[in-house]
Image (cartoon, rainbow, N blue to C red):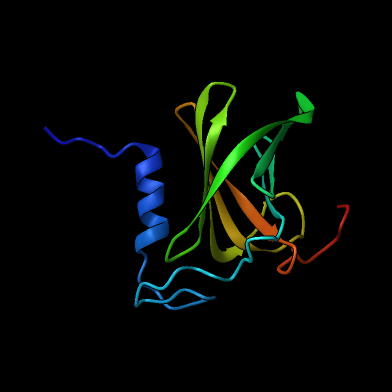
Length: 142
């Protein structure tokens, strides 16, 4: 019988084990350092629309049905190929990963420097990300 890794474990392995050399990734196993610990990290997705802002150990999760957002504690993990953030949101395990790579949200002309993946309540959501020092390019209000 083949067992599948839970989404959290698979995403953390991807963050920790990718051997490619690009955008701050070190194939020798050095920790990803392209995003400083004090930077704000923003992840966004469409269909369904969602957003996560992580800053100072706190995540704020917003959706069209929850514009003010839900605040929750997150723990940051720097792997070899990006960052992971874990926490509990509304009683559900929550994992977000941010990895280097050109990304488009598919709805605007914005270009993002990171790819984002969210695992929440058995769902996997995909989107894009940016940080304080590595912003998106394109119209600020498309």
